[in-house]
Image 1 (cartoon, rainbow, N blue to C red):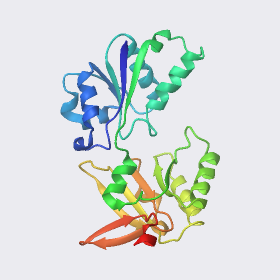
Image 2: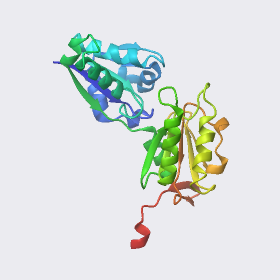
Image 3: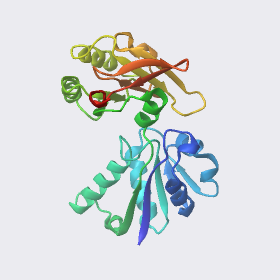
Image 4: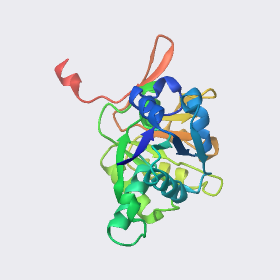
Length: 258
Protein backbone atom coordinates (compact mmCIF):
# COMPACT_ATOMS: atom_id res chain seq x y z
CA UNK A 1 0.00 0.00 0.00
CA UNK A 2 1.17 3.54 -0.78
CA UNK A 3 2.36 5.56 2.22
CA UNK A 4 1.88 9.19 3.18
CA UNK A 5 3.52 10.50 6.33
CA UNK A 6 2.11 13.65 7.89
CA UNK A 7 5.10 15.04 9.79
CA UNK A 8 5.45 17.76 12.40
CA UNK A 9 9.03 19.08 12.36
CA UNK A 10 8.82 21.16 15.54
CA UNK A 11 9.34 24.90 15.92
CA UNK A 12 12.55 25.18 13.90
CA UNK A 13 15.57 23.94 15.86
CA UNK A 14 16.72 20.69 14.25
CA UNK A 15 17.66 19.39 17.72
CA UNK A 16 13.92 19.39 18.46
CA UNK A 17 12.98 17.30 15.43
CA UNK A 18 11.96 13.92 16.82
CA UNK A 19 13.94 10.78 15.92
CA UNK A 20 10.69 9.37 14.51
CA UNK A 21 10.29 12.36 12.18
CA UNK A 22 13.86 11.99 10.96
CA UNK A 23 13.34 8.27 10.45
CA UNK A 24 10.24 8.65 8.29
CA UNK A 25 11.71 11.49 6.21
CA UNK A 26 14.66 9.20 5.48
CA UNK A 27 12.19 6.63 4.10
CA UNK A 28 10.59 9.10 1.70
CA UNK A 29 11.44 9.93 -1.89
CA UNK A 30 9.25 13.06 -2.01
CA UNK A 31 8.72 15.90 0.47
CA UNK A 32 5.84 18.37 0.22
CA UNK A 33 5.95 21.57 2.29
CA UNK A 34 6.16 25.31 2.40
CA UNK A 35 9.77 25.95 1.38
CA UNK A 36 10.85 27.56 4.66
CA UNK A 37 10.10 24.36 6.55
CA UNK A 38 12.36 22.34 4.26
CA UNK A 39 15.09 24.96 4.62
CA UNK A 40 14.89 24.73 8.41
CA UNK A 41 15.27 20.95 8.30
CA UNK A 42 18.54 21.31 6.37
CA UNK A 43 20.53 18.11 5.87
CA UNK A 44 17.60 15.89 6.82
CA UNK A 45 16.03 16.72 3.45
CA UNK A 46 19.07 16.04 1.27
CA UNK A 47 18.59 13.59 -1.59
CA UNK A 48 14.81 14.01 -1.64
CA UNK A 49 12.56 15.53 -4.30
CA UNK A 50 11.20 18.79 -2.91
CA UNK A 51 7.71 20.03 -3.76
CA UNK A 52 7.62 23.61 -2.47
CA UNK A 53 4.22 25.30 -2.58
CA UNK A 54 3.83 28.83 -1.19
CA UNK A 55 1.69 30.04 1.69
CA UNK A 56 -1.95 30.17 0.67
CA UNK A 57 -1.66 26.97 -1.37
CA UNK A 58 -2.51 24.61 1.51
CA UNK A 59 -5.25 22.72 -0.35
CA UNK A 60 -2.99 22.24 -3.37
CA UNK A 61 -0.23 21.04 -1.05
CA UNK A 62 -2.45 18.43 0.57
CA UNK A 63 -3.79 17.25 -2.81
CA UNK A 64 -0.29 16.96 -4.22
CA UNK A 65 0.89 14.89 -1.25
CA UNK A 66 -2.05 12.49 -1.66
CA UNK A 67 -1.46 12.25 -5.40
CA UNK A 68 2.25 11.53 -5.00
CA UNK A 69 1.57 8.84 -2.42
CA UNK A 70 -1.22 7.32 -4.52
CA UNK A 71 1.21 7.09 -7.47
CA UNK A 72 3.46 4.88 -5.36
CA UNK A 73 5.94 7.42 -4.05
CA UNK A 74 6.60 7.29 -0.34
CA UNK A 75 5.81 10.87 0.58
CA UNK A 76 6.01 13.18 3.59
CA UNK A 77 3.80 16.22 3.96
CA UNK A 78 5.65 18.46 6.40
CA UNK A 79 4.51 21.28 8.67
CA UNK A 80 6.28 23.24 11.36
CA UNK A 81 5.30 22.59 14.97
CA UNK A 82 2.83 19.73 15.28
CA UNK A 83 1.14 18.90 11.97
CA UNK A 84 -2.13 18.23 13.78
CA UNK A 85 -2.29 21.68 15.45
CA UNK A 86 -3.43 24.44 13.05
CA UNK A 87 -1.60 22.58 10.31
CA UNK A 88 -1.92 20.26 7.33
CA UNK A 89 -3.06 16.94 8.84
CA UNK A 90 -6.66 18.03 9.26
CA UNK A 91 -6.82 19.16 5.61
CA UNK A 92 -5.64 15.75 4.38
CA UNK A 93 -8.31 14.01 6.43
CA UNK A 94 -10.92 16.50 5.22
CA UNK A 95 -10.05 15.67 1.60
CA UNK A 96 -10.22 11.94 2.36
CA UNK A 97 -13.58 12.49 4.03
CA UNK A 98 -14.82 14.28 0.92
CA UNK A 99 -13.63 11.38 -1.24
CA UNK A 100 -15.43 8.85 0.97
CA UNK A 101 -18.61 10.93 0.64
CA UNK A 102 -18.27 11.09 -3.14
CA UNK A 103 -17.47 14.80 -3.36
CA UNK A 104 -14.03 14.13 -4.86
CA UNK A 105 -13.10 12.02 -7.87
CA UNK A 106 -9.85 10.55 -6.63
CA UNK A 107 -10.58 6.93 -5.60
CA UNK A 108 -6.85 6.16 -5.62
CA UNK A 109 -6.48 8.26 -2.46
CA UNK A 110 -8.29 5.56 -0.51
CA UNK A 111 -5.42 3.15 -1.18
CA UNK A 112 -2.96 5.42 0.62
CA UNK A 113 -1.85 4.45 4.11
CA UNK A 114 -1.58 7.48 6.42
CA UNK A 115 0.72 7.86 9.42
CA UNK A 116 0.77 11.04 11.52
CA UNK A 117 4.06 11.92 13.22
CA UNK A 118 3.66 14.58 15.94
CA UNK A 119 6.07 17.43 16.61
CA UNK A 120 6.72 19.98 19.33
CA UNK A 121 4.29 22.87 18.95
CA UNK A 122 5.12 26.55 19.23
CA UNK A 123 3.18 26.81 22.48
CA UNK A 124 5.25 24.02 24.02
CA UNK A 125 8.50 25.61 22.88
CA UNK A 126 7.41 29.02 24.14
CA UNK A 127 6.26 27.70 27.50
CA UNK A 128 9.58 25.90 27.96
CA UNK A 129 11.54 29.06 27.21
CA UNK A 130 9.56 30.92 29.87
CA UNK A 131 9.50 28.14 32.47
CA UNK A 132 6.19 26.35 33.03
CA UNK A 133 3.43 28.59 31.77
CA UNK A 134 1.25 25.66 30.71
CA UNK A 135 1.34 24.11 34.17
CA UNK A 136 -2.44 24.15 34.51
CA UNK A 137 -5.43 24.12 32.17
CA UNK A 138 -4.85 25.95 28.89
CA UNK A 139 -6.29 26.45 25.43
CA UNK A 140 -5.24 27.78 22.04
CA UNK A 141 -7.10 30.28 19.89
CA UNK A 142 -6.22 31.27 16.35
CA UNK A 143 -6.96 34.93 15.74
CA UNK A 144 -7.11 34.49 11.97
CA UNK A 145 -10.63 35.08 10.71
CA UNK A 146 -9.81 33.97 7.17
CA UNK A 147 -11.44 30.57 7.78
CA UNK A 148 -13.33 31.14 11.04
CA UNK A 149 -15.84 33.97 11.56
CA UNK A 150 -14.69 36.63 14.03
CA UNK A 151 -17.92 36.18 16.01
CA UNK A 152 -16.89 32.58 16.72
CA UNK A 153 -13.36 33.57 17.67
CA UNK A 154 -14.62 36.31 19.98
CA UNK A 155 -16.97 33.86 21.71
CA UNK A 156 -14.06 31.48 22.31
CA UNK A 157 -11.91 34.25 23.79
CA UNK A 158 -14.71 35.16 26.20
CA UNK A 159 -15.04 31.49 27.15
CA UNK A 160 -11.28 31.20 27.73
CA UNK A 161 -11.41 34.30 29.90
CA UNK A 162 -14.40 33.11 31.91
CA UNK A 163 -12.79 29.70 32.39
CA UNK A 164 -9.48 31.29 33.48
CA UNK A 165 -7.47 29.29 30.96
CA UNK A 166 -3.91 30.12 29.99
CA UNK A 167 -4.38 31.16 26.35
CA UNK A 168 -1.94 30.71 23.47
CA UNK A 169 -2.81 32.93 20.53
CA UNK A 170 -1.73 31.60 17.14
CA UNK A 171 -1.78 33.79 14.00
CA UNK A 172 -2.02 36.90 16.19
CA UNK A 173 -1.51 39.48 13.43
CA UNK A 174 -0.72 39.75 9.74
CA UNK A 175 -0.37 42.54 7.20
CA UNK A 176 -4.13 42.49 6.66
CA UNK A 177 -5.15 41.76 10.25
CA UNK A 178 -3.84 44.23 12.81
CA UNK A 179 -6.75 44.74 15.22
CA UNK A 180 -7.76 41.29 16.48
CA UNK A 181 -4.98 40.91 19.04
CA UNK A 182 -5.74 44.17 20.83
CA UNK A 183 -9.42 43.25 20.85
CA UNK A 184 -8.54 39.87 22.37
CA UNK A 185 -6.41 41.64 24.99
CA UNK A 186 -9.31 43.91 25.94
CA UNK A 187 -11.63 40.92 26.29
CA UNK A 188 -9.23 39.06 28.58
CA UNK A 189 -8.74 42.18 30.70
CA UNK A 190 -12.40 41.81 31.68
CA UNK A 191 -11.55 38.50 33.34
CA UNK A 192 -8.01 38.75 34.72
CA UNK A 193 -5.64 41.34 36.22
CA UNK A 194 -3.77 43.88 34.10
CA UNK A 195 -0.47 42.55 35.50
CA UNK A 196 -1.13 39.02 34.20
CA UNK A 197 2.13 37.70 32.64
CA UNK A 198 2.30 37.49 28.85
CA UNK A 199 4.93 35.73 26.76
CA UNK A 200 5.82 37.20 23.36
CA UNK A 201 7.82 34.56 21.49
CA UNK A 202 9.06 35.41 18.00
CA UNK A 203 10.78 32.86 15.74
CA UNK A 204 10.87 30.39 18.61
CA UNK A 205 14.01 28.16 18.69
CA UNK A 206 15.32 29.72 15.46
CA UNK A 207 18.45 31.82 14.97
CA UNK A 208 16.67 35.16 15.41
CA UNK A 209 14.54 34.05 18.34
CA UNK A 210 13.30 36.82 20.62
CA UNK A 211 11.48 36.25 23.91
CA UNK A 212 9.77 38.97 25.93
CA UNK A 213 7.81 38.77 29.17
CA UNK A 214 5.36 41.62 29.61
CA UNK A 215 1.99 42.21 31.26
CA UNK A 216 -1.43 41.87 29.70
CA UNK A 217 -1.94 45.63 29.94
CA UNK A 218 1.29 46.17 27.95
CA UNK A 219 0.33 43.80 25.11
CA UNK A 220 0.06 45.68 21.83
CA UNK A 221 -0.33 44.31 18.31
CA UNK A 222 2.25 46.78 16.94
CA UNK A 223 4.98 44.72 18.68
CA UNK A 224 3.84 41.40 17.19
CA UNK A 225 4.06 39.82 13.73
CA UNK A 226 2.93 36.63 12.02
CA UNK A 227 5.99 34.73 13.27
CA UNK A 228 5.05 35.40 16.89
CA UNK A 229 3.28 33.31 19.50
CA UNK A 230 1.45 35.23 22.22
CA UNK A 231 0.76 33.33 25.44
CA UNK A 232 -1.33 34.92 28.19
CA UNK A 233 -1.18 33.51 31.70
CA UNK A 234 -4.23 32.91 33.85
CA UNK A 235 -5.14 34.83 37.00
CA UNK A 236 -2.73 32.70 39.07
CA UNK A 237 0.30 32.67 36.74
CA UNK A 238 3.41 33.94 38.53
CA UNK A 239 6.36 35.97 37.19
CA UNK A 240 9.56 35.41 39.19
CA UNK A 241 13.29 36.12 38.90
CA UNK A 242 15.60 33.17 39.52
CA UNK A 243 19.39 33.17 38.91
CA UNK A 244 19.08 36.59 37.25
CA UNK A 245 16.58 35.27 34.72
CA UNK A 246 12.85 35.89 34.41
CA UNK A 247 10.48 32.94 34.54
CA UNK A 248 6.73 32.41 34.45
CA UNK A 249 4.90 29.44 35.89
CA UNK A 250 1.24 28.61 36.36
CA UNK A 251 0.63 26.77 39.65
CA UNK A 252 -1.58 23.71 39.64
CA UNK A 253 -2.48 23.74 43.31
CA UNK A 254 0.37 21.84 44.94
CA UNK A 255 0.87 24.76 47.38
CA UNK A 256 -1.88 23.22 49.51
CA UNK A 257 0.33 20.14 49.97
CA UNK A 258 3.66 21.92 50.56
